[in-house]
Length: 212
Image (cartoon, rainbow, N blue to C red; front, side, top):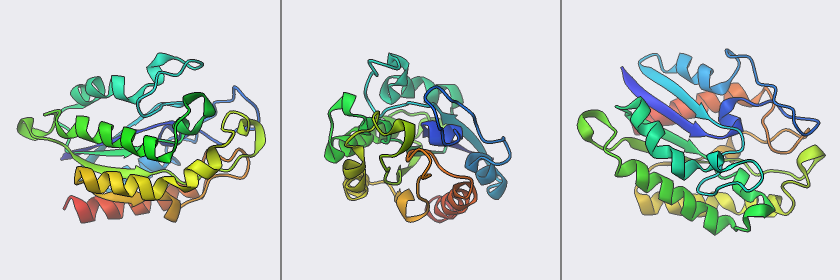
């Protein structure tokens, strides 16, 4: 059985759309796209490593340094080794104005994560894990999170092309989740229930095609 590691943020964790700051409700275990994906890939062990607020490479001055996806990545890889494939879906939290980055910067940060994985030696027999780089769908500035993500919507719409180019530079396959799902109109960041089966199907198809 091969191992698929899902490395992401609240949308990998399974966080429900929120109507007030501080809410942290989560989809039921069987409803989350990560567990649906596991059922679609019975020959894989699927491990969800989703942390709400996780960034690509930034310490969060508000939510804490542990949100930095780069600093914790080596430990996560070594904890689950051997890892055959890592699905990386990050970048949404980088859109917060506190980080002062643009779409190109976010893509470069994702490329840095990919290169850490490819040089980690945490795959089978000390080889490199494979990587599927996923661009999250564009956000909308609405609801209680609008201020936290002010100015992020326009940047998010430019992200897919930049992340696709980063994947090409790193030599890994790319998937645009914005072609599969949209964010919830409730908070503009998290996914509604209809996204769970759609993402699971899309990711299962990509894993089967890219890592037969």
